[in-house]
Amino acid sequence: MLFNSTRKLRYSSYRTRRRLSGQLHYGVRLGATNRHSQFMRQKTLGFHLLFLLPSLLFVFVANVSAQGNQNAIEVPVGLSLLLKAKGEGVQVHGCVNGSWILQAPAADLLDEQRRVIGRHYGGPAWRLNDGRLVEGVVVSKQVSPEATSIPWLLLKSVRGTGGLEAVQFIQRSETHGGIAPGENCSQATAVRVHTLRFIRFMGERDDPSE
Image 1 (tube, rainbow, N blue to C red):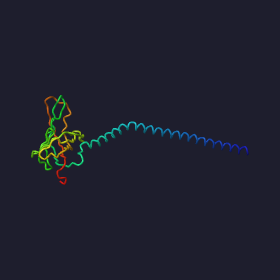
Image 2: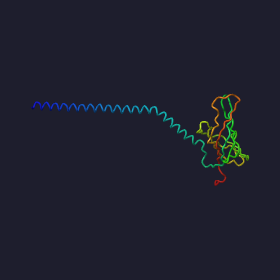
Image 3: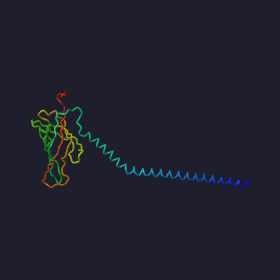
Image 4: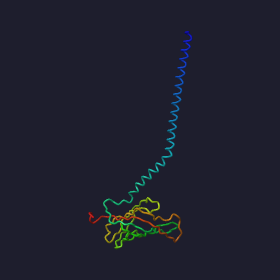
């Protein structure tokens, strides 16, 4: 009887040790598996980041460039709007050595009622129907949001007559069309490409309250 009890006790102890040993080994295997899975997840994440990083960097640089361009044609602080007009006409491109080169703009200046109040032509220059004239030179430009449109410009006035001497800057924005054809050209050829733009003449008013 005592012998059987001893055998049962030893067998029970043996099963307990086996169970604990199995749990221990299982825990080790489970821990190793978890560490392996975690390592693989980190490796996969690093792999994706490696390929995404150049794209993210490109987007960041593009955004910074775009933000910088937004200020390219801003008029200096303190100036007032003296005259605003819509330019509707063409950009004349000539063929030089197989490439299109801008020769001159040719556009009507329209007021808000779409009445013709003047002309815009090469120089660049803007002449009103009453004889007043402004000539300018480009000081900065900004790429148009429309790929097929001429750039936005900020020009500094170099001459003003007939009461437009107060104009200091001319801003060309909100352009539509006007880009030269993409294909090569032949000699003695010219094209006229339709375009729209808004022109703002900025300067100091004689009476700031106006």
